[in-house]
Length: 521
Image 1 (cartoon, rainbow, N blue to C red):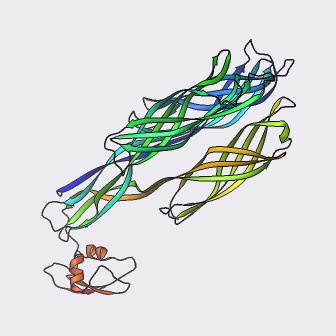
Image 2: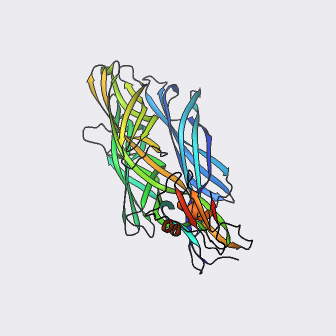
Image 3: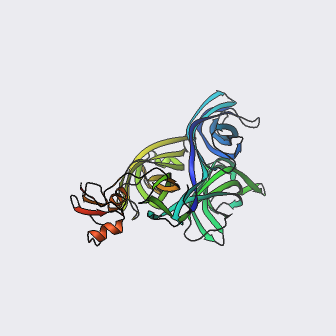
């Protein structure tokens, strides 16, 4: 026989699968007929993007491109600098049990290594190694009993739980279509030989069931100037990125985790009067917003009836008890030795920060890591492009009051901006602005009763009054349940003002019964 109850159903977004695999992207860069042969390759780089994701019949289909570019020295009378570009497509199919069209996907791809080989004077073979990481979540319903409604002498132990839940993941495509003009001090463009885009400073605002997602896109180009000596020049511009994501039932307590990803990127010089002092930028981006909402639920964690046996079944799920999503800016200033600085022009300095160690303390995190610098420069006297790699350590203490030493903390680091200035003929000073994202999904187990029925079997015989001595890990609730009494009656018989008891304390345990016997335990 079941007992009448009031139930509450909650919807939890749970991880059903994770997949980490290596992806190899391969292709060839071919010199067009209008360009000279390859003498030597100065640099090969690639940006790798995911352009499409689709779920079909329990399988995840992922499409992407690698935008590959090479800078080479030409086999001509001036040993001129030239560039090559091509798009390499890749396609991955992943079988994932339980995935469906409503699943929430978190997909990222990271470039690891680039290998290349000059096959002949007209062709470069390129092989790119990348890491593909996939997390799949499904919304799952769980039902808990929150109260007993029929007229029974049932003792109930309830608790109210507050938790965060990933209620939805929404994405929106954003297009950038801008014309960027060089400064008056810049030389006009003859040929763009290298370009990249990166998104920094993500931020959001919530208003009228919309998420305003915004960021900055930093666009950097290296180009051959349209001048007598065809010098190598650089230029950098910042373009604002903005998009709206619709989601009903947003409020100020909602927590949003944003992620911008670039799906395509194209640059073209714009000519006027046979000169180019500007270029067009076209880029397709996607911004994904993971929306976390605060929830509250009352569950019955334990119960008993002094007069009958009860059978209970339990629901045990993992919930987010603490959600922390914060960004900390870190500035690193470091001097670097660069020989022959007077004879070279620095084209780009890329910084790749990593985290090696972190120490989680109450209220703060101590982070140790390295920044790998990749300096690309043009030797004007030799007319060649070279690179220099330097690895430097950094340390930082982040003050985050909500952090506890026992939490599992996720930290990611990326570069916001790199600036440099010449100190003397052999030294530059680099200033790197890094962003440390701290994301904590502290989880706990939520256990509650989801069904109750009466067991018709006879009750075990228990004395009407028990003299009980408190044992380790005892509580008034455990003692009352064991002897089919109640917490209130034990407190009344023993003149206790609260629920506090101590080891070896003597308690009188009453029980409603016709038989009056006393047993010492």
